Image (tube, rainbow, N blue to C red; front, side, top):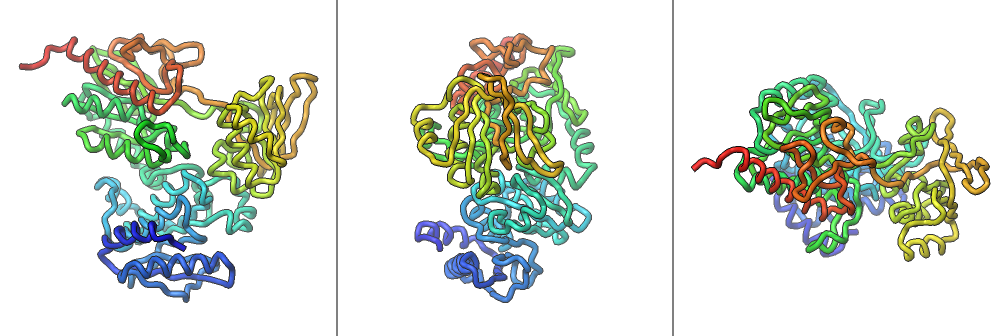
Length: 519
């Protein structure tokens, strides 16, 4: 099951086990059960602190629990946790075996302080890059709090459950049998949903913070770069972000990040956060900016939580978000057929007919990816022709289960009240309305800058992007901007990082020209 290279890596990890870990499997005669048994045997052969039992009684087969020997099992994997979820399994083994997590002391205390009994179930696909974050967060919570249990369920393997619950997007989380949430969630976000007083307490703490020298708004590549460059100047630096990592968290393969031949978005996001936290930077997560203004010589950033931060200078790095279709039915069936991540949700549409909207590289790549999973994929492009690279177009056209329709304007997403059943588009040549019988649509039509909160405070161009100068300065003195939120012509990770560095240096230059440097 595990090749020699993985076994060698796992051997090094298993050396960190402090306590004996027991894996209890519930199996049947299926091929997948045999895979699970082989996986568990391979793990047990690596460490004498891991043992396997085959007398599990879980109704889901194959599945297995992970627990410190002698303790009730609170972590279960239903399916074969390979692919992106193999890391989730390794961490579950380590944390159950007494190896400390890297979570902050405050987060650990918040998890341990949760009052209530929580049984979580997370439906995933093994190709989903967002799912491991949720699985790992809930597994960690289960190891820290004896009243929390968590089960990861491979939606592709337990399709009857997925269809019964009409799950069409992963990760999908259930709590005590009821829907809890969809999409990427960190442990901090989950705790905030469970502890309703947490936001108010955190807001009160934020309000009490002294003014920063540089406040970075946004935690993506541009924001991380700006924070590091500012902190290295020895000045008081803060980062306030809705989620650290930004759009990078939704990126699968990265092959053009210079000096790193190949990586994945979540891995890069983790590395960014670890680099920033190695400096004296005050990071405030789960906070969305709501407005900005100048007052008494300082820049004030108002947050949706009600708190306000003050700083002598600000670097805006709030990035961009997926552009939506903005047609009737899109919001009603979001997560019920309307999707934005083919790698995450594609496996849930196995054997079904789907559509992709968007003829650029991302849209054509999505259609190619989906064609290997679904019965048929139809790509709709508004323009006269596809805009993707020629090699991608050629690949898509070579597929027998793919259709390309140009000059198509999407007009509505159809459904039965529970899930998407089709969509309509207007043929821009004939003017006629057409209907596609599809179970899902993957929207791949570009990005929108996250600048709604900035309207009226800094100059924006016609596309809503922040207008910047050569030093990343904006129209408001003391405010700089970097990354996808700006009018930079190329939206690339490495470009955002460079602009983040420029913005921080620009802010520092602004500060030393405003206040004499102490001798």
